[in-house]
Image (cartoon, rainbow, N blue to C red; front, side, top):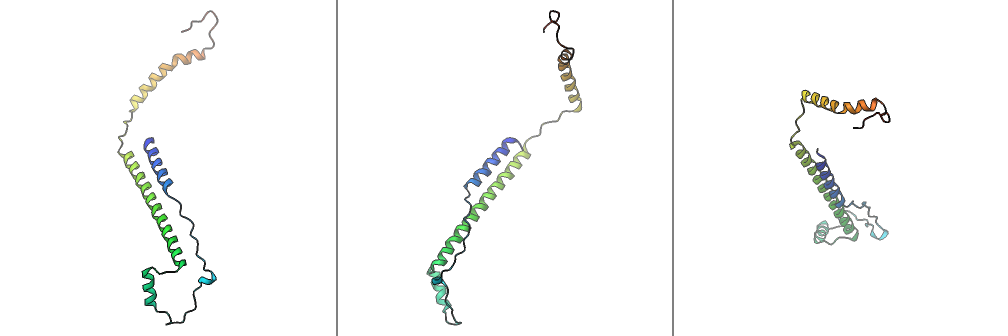
Length: 143
């Protein structure tokens, strides 16, 4: 993957992660003494009426708090899933872009040999002058 695609993908992932708020830890709702459910004998509760009250929204305070907590937790999970999907799609797009880039032609062995010969001839005079020792005062020629 070319470096610019990797940088773009990393930037998009970091941006997506920055917008996702971590979900608050889920706290169990503890019942106080006044909120405890009363003992009910079988057949004493009219469940049809209780269900109608529930549909109308007439619920207890503890149930409403639990419902709000579950809604917040679900919203956090949805946001996290969306950010993960966005990061995954960016990674797939970067991989596709990297695979669609044209490949540079490789040099033949003959061309590599001749480049090595030219480089050796270019550095050979410098190597000889360094290995021959210091230039004598007055007798040497500076090039």
